[in-house]
Image (cartoon, rainbow over all chains, first blue to last red; front, side):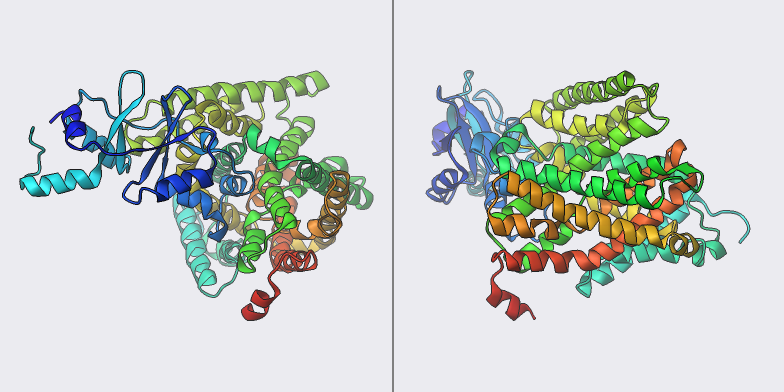
Length: 148
Length: 404
């Protein structure tokens, strides 16, 4: 199955936040979509420029509760910035023409729950949600995703 | 036992003993640093080391240098220009005050007591060496106190910033001292010293670009650590080959890697941060194995002098810096008391110093003095930090009573 087919079948909502958003604003958007675990940061032109996972966001916001912190984490605690400064610019994403199995491999390797599907301009078309994939496989009774 | 034991066997024994004693200390709620040092001391020449043929020889030099390089990389990558701008004037002034205060007080105290030669080395060089090490602190002990009492407020924030940043200043001071004093300098003149520093930063920036470029192309997470380790070692080796300052070069590598990669530090630093505790076990156990009761007691005056001068320098320097930076009065008065702990970086630097050709004769003195004071600071440091936070009104008194 191609990613483009998947996106048509599962037109998932994806969480996107602007670069200048604060961590608290990003958290509010993530909490509004409790089923989603990955947040994508977009530029003013709508291009996806970075990724922030639910876990990373939780780490940043709950640093005060960690008894052991590295110097990098202490700096993140005392001088935290906007999502643009704390996001990962080198994130993995999927293209519409790719096979789903290649995408799943990357998704598992990089611990991504909701992988963004981007067009040639880097704008978001949808996402591949790991739970949806597992549900679909279960329904099909197979370990491979069959084309619709 | 007549022949010396294999370096790998010695290292294995030291690390495992350190780990087991550290684990025991954690269970008992005691600081792990003391446990690691005790493990090393157990295998020092005066105790089991002499009987078992355990000797920390030249093999440890390369290991210590590589370990310090990873710490320098982590420290360099912990800070961004944006964060420094956001910290504001108060923290920058206090940082300058506490690091320079500790360095100047220790320098002046050693020069006063030993202006001539100590064990064949110029007193000036010895004073510079101790002064450079004095700037560093250990975040772990201070952080533990802040966490235990859930301290919060302007002083807590300032204190956290300082313990995170002053190791970077300490490494820079140490590198400058090495340029000025040791044979690591290209020629010894001011210009060649400046060229060495500029060269170190330029080399660090170049390797930072390389690491950022390579890391951006990693598609498999398991390749991340090998990539980082390779470039850190390549950078360190190049710095040594070109007679640049190794620590400054690797610290610049960390800083520029993060600047070029622009990925919030997590992917390129978290894998190495996992090694940090291992590195500290190596430092503390190796330093403990250098322990010589005779040397320590013969130079006990240096232990007392360094301990008091560094503490006084931190308190006075931080106080002056904080006042100049416009900190509230309670912060300016008490902030220096939270900066006493000294641990891994100081011990690592003392081991590194002992390997420098210019310091070989006093290497054991430096390691033993830093080791002795580290243990003292680990005991006194948390008590002083708690007192300072309490006096600044940033500790939940009810929680403190509950903890008793």
